[in-house]
Each structure stands twice: as C-alpha cells, then as structure tokens.
Length: 327
Image 1 (cartoon, helix red, strand yellow):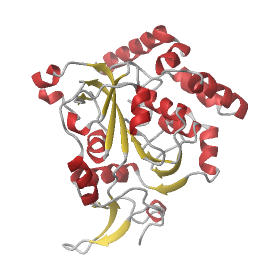
Image 2: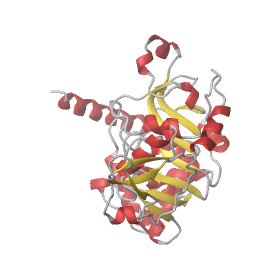
Image 3: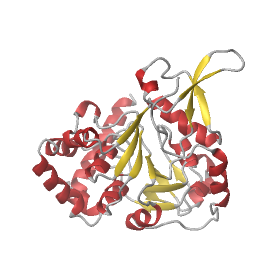
C-alpha cells in the first residue's frame, strides 16, 4: 500500500549532500536581527520546520516577523505545532502542511480561525504521526532517503500519508518506508548560543538535533548570547554545532507566550485571550493588528503583554514549579 499524500520536500540525499558540502563552515559571527534573518534566509515557497514541541521552546519572535513580512506559499512541518501553527495561520503564510498535530492548543482548546484556514481548502495536507515526523528528520540527518518503521501500518493515517509499504529483505515482514524530510529552513529557540552558532538546549531536545542536521538553513534564537569560550571550556554543552547554523539572534523571553524550560512558564492568560479572539473575525483581526502587524519588534509585543513585570512573574512560576517537581 502506498499513501495518497504528496511529499513536499526533496528526498534524494545526494542532492542535499551536495548542498551541505557547499555550505560555508567558517567560524565567523552569524549574529543578526530578527528582521534580517527572516528577510535574508526565508523565501516565499520555502518549507519551514519549527523547533521545540507544542507551546514549549518555540521561536515566537521569528514567527511574528514572518507574518509581518508577509511571507507566502510556505510549506510547514506540523510536528505537534500548536501556537507556532496558530501564528503562521494568522498570516496565511503556508499553503501545504505535513500534519501530525496542528490547530489544537492541547487542553486549552481549538483556535477557530486557525481551524477555518485549514478547512477552507487553502492548505494541502499530508498526514503522519509525531513519531513518523521524527523518523523522517532522523533519516535526513543520517543521509538516507527513507527509514523503515512499523508505525501507522493498517491505519487511515498511513493511507493519507506519503509512506510506502515495503517488505523486509531479511525477514519478509511488512514495514512502512517514511521519506526523509529536508526542510529549507529550521527555526530553533535555545537557552544559550555563541556568535558562531554553537547552541545549548537544556532539558528535553525533542527532535531538534535531527532537525538542525536535516535543514538546509538554520536560524537560532537564544535567551542569552554567550562567549564562544563557554562552549570551548565545556564541549558537552554543544547541542547544535556552529557549522549547521546560518543566523544567531539574541531574543530574551523569545519563547513567550510559550514555556521555556527552567526559564519561564507559559502565559496562559495571553494564550486564552488569543483563543477568545479567534471566536469572532473582527475581534481576531483587531487582535492581530494590535499584537503583530502594528508592532515593530518582539520587544514591543512583550511590552503590550505586560512587559518585564509579567515576564518576571512567569519566571517565578517556572522556578516554583521546578522546585516542587524536584522534591
């Protein structure tokens, strides 16, 4: 059985290997602004993949800027994409999506206008599971065109995926071949990075190591920009090495209103406000104008949402939750 869904990205590892071979690997500063990174590195029609997971460790500042700059006809990796999907759908930025989990904000609810965007037919969708999306990135990071899995066999998810059923040459058992996923651009928010692009993620990595190795271009936003000596003195801190990275941007509270593990908790009040705004088209448009289109920077957005007083409150909440969890 072959899945009916379309595969949206190149799967030939040799095509990508040639690209990676030519990619500059000099140890130079890659520090730039959010506006510069989006303008220089993200083109209409590119396929985007976002790091983190759900509302945790998401690169909100870059996502807002993609909407502000009006990027269109993007592909999008819906690998448990909740608030990141909500932001990009607000700008109608993507027209094709690999879906594992999108639209829903978990227990918070379903954003009505985001759902309407998918139901309008404006977005071509191919279905996968979260595990399959992770393995697709794993295949790309390994430099192979597919990886065999047992996931999805016998389900309608497989039917509407882009996977192909194969037979194991050693055992005769059935597997699904899921194709490698090579995004044009990956956007990943991390705890610390140096000017070269070396990055440190604390806590759960999800699939970000594979994502950074699979993507043609990698944009890193970080809570703190630190000297390169931090990584040289403790190489174990290097989750993502510099030679994979194309841009580094220091964005304190850059995952807001999402959660940043060990840094600050999610702003449930603001996420609820966004959900409520999506109940009515006029309210929704006014909300987007206020928080995205009429703001010049992520810092202005933070000020509108309560500024440092709110950020410190969320930081204290995260500290207390981690302390309680450690008991």
